[in-house]
Each structure stands twice: as structure tokens, then as C-alpha cells.
Image (cartoon, rainbow, N blue to C red; front, side):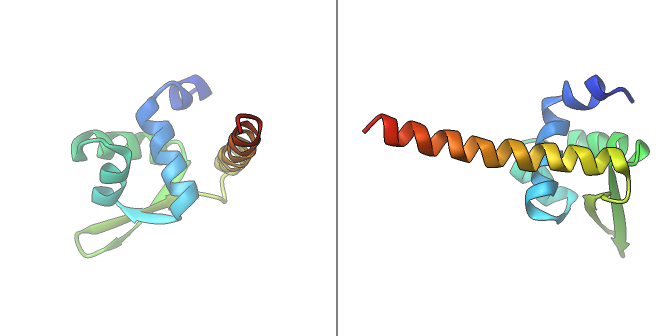
Length: 100
């Protein structure tokens, strides 16, 4: 999977952002938070897992997904998401002060 395949999919980006922010979640909760249906979420997670960006563990029928921080690419994407969110909050705060 090329980087544009990962980042050009709004659904995959949402899933990655959610996992960076929350840590671990089951598919249903990821789907709910991302605003996606179960089948689409499952498809995105399988693609991300096939490329080593996320991992899952099984508890009976439940699969819990998390970011695969052992993968250097996943680690860099995680840092990008964290940096983006941090700078986005800073920009929002400075705009609010300027607009007062």
C-alpha cells in the first residue's frame, strides 16, 4: 500500500486518528466514532492491518484494534497525527484570541 492509498481514504484517516487518540477499540466502537458502517470499517481495518499499521487481539468473538507502534511507518503516522492535532489546537486557540 502506498502512502497515498492510506492518506487518500477519509475513512482510513479517521480510523487512524481515532486509534491514536483512544488507543484500543473494538470494530463497532471504531465504526461509531468514525461515522462508518461495520463492513466499511472492517474493510479499512483489514487493509491497515495487512500493511502493518494496526494490530488486533481477540477476546472470543471480539477483536480489539490498536495502532502498531512497533512498525516504523505506523509510528511516523502516529507522530504526524499527534503533531497535526496539537498544532490544530494551537491554531484554534490563537484564532479565538485574535477574533475577540
